[in-house]
Every structure is written in C-alpha cells, then in structure tokens.
Length: 123
Image 1 (cartoon, rainbow, N blue to C red):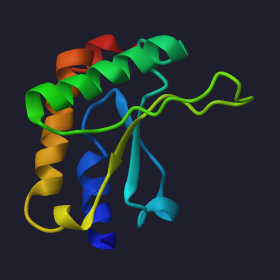
Image 2 (image 1 turned 60 degrees about the vertical axis):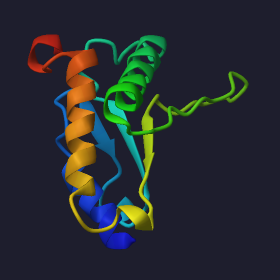
Image 3 (image 1 turned 180 degrees about the vertical axis):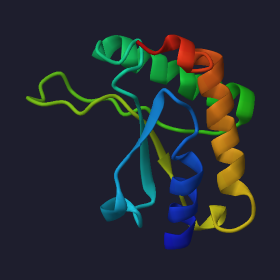
Image 4 (image 1 turned 90 degrees about the horizontal axis):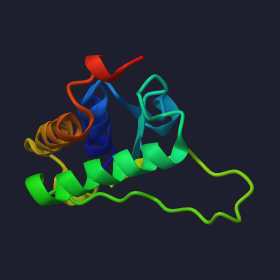
C-alpha cells in the first residue's frame, strides 16, 4: 500500500501546471492525496471560484475518464477552513500496473479541459 501511495504521488506531482499535490515527504506513505490549485492559478485567490473549478475537474474526471474523486465540503461554521482540494484515495487494488500513470493522465486531461493548458491562465 505504501508503494502504491508513493507511486501515485510521483505520478501526480506534475499532472498539470495549475494543480499542486499537497504534502511532502512526511505524507509520502499516506493513501490520501489532495490536489489544490497553485497559488498563481487565475481563480486560486477566490475560494468559491477555486472550489467551483475543482468541482468541474472532479466532474470531468468522473464523466470523461471514469475516475471517481471527492471534493471535500466543510461547514461554514468552522473557524478556519482548508483550501479547496480534490481528494484521491489510493487503495491496495491500485497497487502495481499502470494505475498511477493512468490516473495521472486522466487528471491531466480533466484539468486541461477545465483549466486550460496552464501557462496562459497564470498571472
């Protein structure tokens, strides 16, 4: 399971110029991965716009690529809310093979479809 999580982290590290894989070495063994918009992404400063863009990426992943991900929703009563993210959970069934590369390719395609190629959307 640890090797599968690490393989997914490597594959998703540069999936799209406007997406950032959260967590470093300390989180390398965690099967839960979060993708957030890069701070310089066009919609990143506005949390609602960022959430909307990530929801569109998640919907595109499901509809066009068959990859199911979650976009966490937090209560407005929470004093401090985390930045919006797409959450992927790596499980033992995804270990080995080309699963990490296939998911990274799907994320790349969905992000490109929703966010564009990347460079032209940066400030």
